[in-house]
Length: 168
Image (cartoon, rainbow, N blue to C red; front, side, top):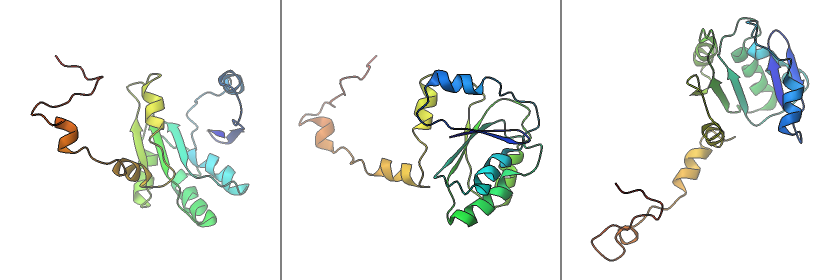
């Protein structure tokens, strides 16, 4: 689901919708400086909506209450777990309030700075790193077995290069 936030949340059911349908549903959403990132999570809290992870796309300026970190603490208490929070930081008038309030509260926030722009390749790859378990990506990486010296040298003293390697 998508939640757009300013001084009040706008919830959009995204499941099963095409990209074109989502564009049509969100065409009137505009940033106006009245940001309350916490109001979207407050909406979920009030309606007993449980999620396994939160992705925030914002310049991280929180200009109105409720602030995300205070709602997040109540939300985590209510559902009985702390879900991972990912911030995709965009260009804007960032005050860094989201980062600082989360840090002061001792809450984990994974930040991906996309202010330099993203393309159709980098953003999907970045999103693939989102996991619902705090250390799930690390576990996934560590589950791959390391190549042995025999794999690399293939019985000779010359390394075996992957087929797609570029040698200049």
